[in-house]
Image (cartoon, rainbow, N blue to C red):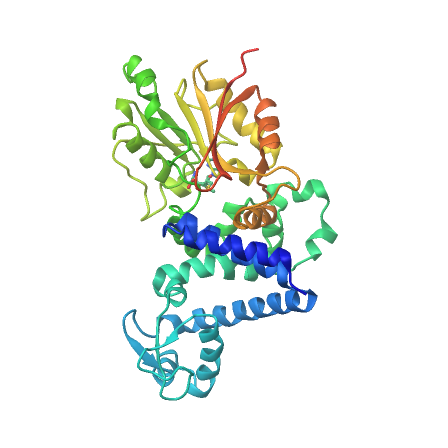
Length: 413
Ligand SMILES: C[S@@+](CC[C@H](N)C(=O)[O-])C[C@H]1O[C@@H](n2cnc3c(N)ncnc32)[C@H](O)[C@@H]1O
């Protein structure tokens, strides 16, 4: 019996493929549509098979990343199974078996001169997928995104729920991550800092991912150039931007650049903890950006007053409302009537109106493990309203509308 839902989705897929302009946004739409077709075709046995296959594939890839299989030969060259085996120091009879499964997942391909099916004479070439796992960047991204959660966050699995109340799951000091790693009493960043293996990997991976996560500037997001008139009208005397919990300053740089290349002559301040701004050998020094050590829990009132914008990117999603209120109240005290708070965050769909990329939902799952959450528009409005702020606009990224700048001002009425 023909599956009319799958057929309709396949026809939509064809339309999307014909309209493909080669952009990452269109590719994401095409890949998502393929997933929808799979979901509408599969029955329980196929669904279980899908998860089994993907789960086992993850274990195999993890092992191959650890062994160095994806680094066994450089891009543009080819290697036989025997050469790969020699490089990673595992017998060729074993590596050949692993390679068969990798090949079917599009990780490596028989080189054009080789036979279509793998045998002893086959030479392997890289593919887009195997290159994603190649080199220090590929290794760091895999280990931070997959190995860290499996090894650390979920080590003791569901026991966490049997030993913690709902209120405790919302306390960052008692998060599943802190508990699972044996560091209850420490927040995520402090607990991670104790982990000699994953802390450096996680930091490097976050730096690599920065450009893919939550666009700072982009079509549909807050139009930074429009601040020119009000900043210049005050002779650049008030700071343009305070990037609170701004990490290594990627957003500070992008916003200063978007504001005439020099922040319209006004100051840009980057605030974070000493372990981020003054980490030995990784001190943050950015021309035109002033560093300020400020702990938004222990530091009291926001030290930079009357800034045009207090900017938070991916900061408040790390905490439930009580902690966010503590952070925001300190900012509210420092704001002038014309100051803005801008939160660069995901705005999750309400209720059953799900859609688009699955990543924000999985990020929300990860955030649960560290004591945070992704919020809907209603939840953002409630949080901001509870500290005397009101949302004046939600600027959504055109190509990925769950990403947004939430613009708020002091409530006047
Ligand atoms: C998820 S990161 C986001 C970093 C940056 N805003 C970005 O978008 O890349 C959260 C940041 O909050 C900082 N942070 C955590 N606790 C803090 C505290 N108590 N005071 C100030 N910053 C803090 C972390 O060091 C980290 O840089």
